[in-house]
Length: 188
Ligand SMILES: Cc1cc2nc3c(=O)[nH]c(=O)nc-3n(C[C@H](O)[C@H](O)[C@H](O)COP(=O)(O)O)c2cc1C
Image 1 (tube, rainbow, N blue to C red):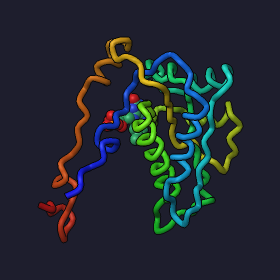
Image 2 (cartoon, rainbow, N blue to C red):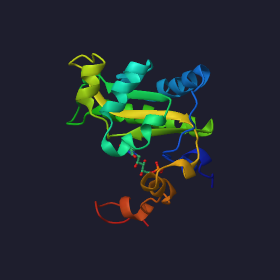
Image 3 (tube, helix red, strand yellow):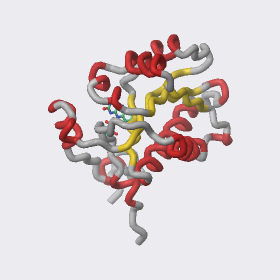
Image 4 (cartoon, protein in one colour):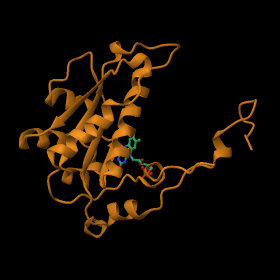
């Protein structure tokens, strides 16, 4: 039986970042991982907006939820993940562009882990604020934030955030979400 690759099992959404920039080469590698994600019909309906200048980073930080402002502002790489729904039209009632974006985000998070970095996804980002500050057109949807950087020290986080980072990450057991023959009948 093959074993789970460590980057899938051990990757964590840590909240501590070193106060130093991320090298351009590392940023490029993260973007490479993102772009090699699968997407329905290979349509790649994604855009990544990087807040780079000091002014852009301020606008990005301003769009963070209160909870995320406690830690994500320190991250040197601040990204808004944007989808263009019309490039991946809804099919059978499913918004496939969101699946595509999620795949690409996970690719980047796993790649980041393998590089010794932290890449943290955030729903706590005000898409309307981002759209306004960064001129995102009406046909594009800000779906999530991703921040990345070198790992810092968990001890340097404020207590509330440190507690979140130190909390062990758990998952449902396979039998809780996998069914055999009938929905609700556990696959065991
Ligand atoms: C789409 C998405 C949105 C998330 N949004 C936030 C967020 O706004 N703030 C936060 O601290 N963590 C956020 N997370 C991180 C999750 O809380 C984390 O993945 C989950 O608790 C499992 O922990 P792990 O990634 O360390 O295994 C998000 C994760 C995903 C996939």
